[in-house]
Length: 116
Length: 107
Image (cartoon, each protein chain N blue to C red):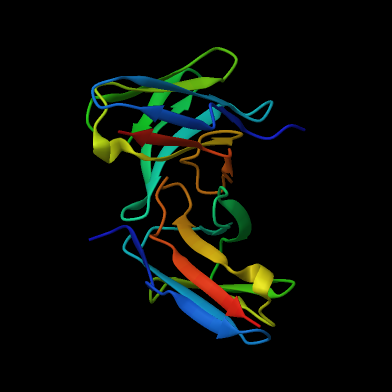
């Protein structure tokens, strides 16, 4: 079974631009969660989508948004990029909700975003 | 107060030693914990999960959960250089992770 895939793997943008990242979960998984990882802040939760609905949301500004399609693929969008948005963006899929106590999350390889 | 806190590290141990990684958590209701390993430049991967008080062993890895004291630990016996990575603990159902502990096993 194929793992979680993310595209693109690397991205360079300039301040003020917007960016869209894509995540395809493991086949049959209905939940996709997004995380931002930086050396200083560690792994921080952005949001989770389950069956096309946002179930949980982290403490990020409204510039960060996402959606999930009927095939469970998910996209994340960041508008008006800032230098501080430079990070590794990881998505993780799980069979049911990642907010379930027994649910394991499987991570994709990540998209490394550099904002200049 | 953070949901989960890990011993900050970095932690350096000689090959063959026992590496001990610890995590404390704030929610007494947390019922399960996951340990993920993340190699440099890679994404996290699950190595252990634990749902009940006590120890759970899997090969060289032992997870320990103490709900009364609200801590969870991961012991790696006979540490190998290939164990060098960042280890993240995560309470089940919270979608949050500890800051991670960088472990280096030197030959």
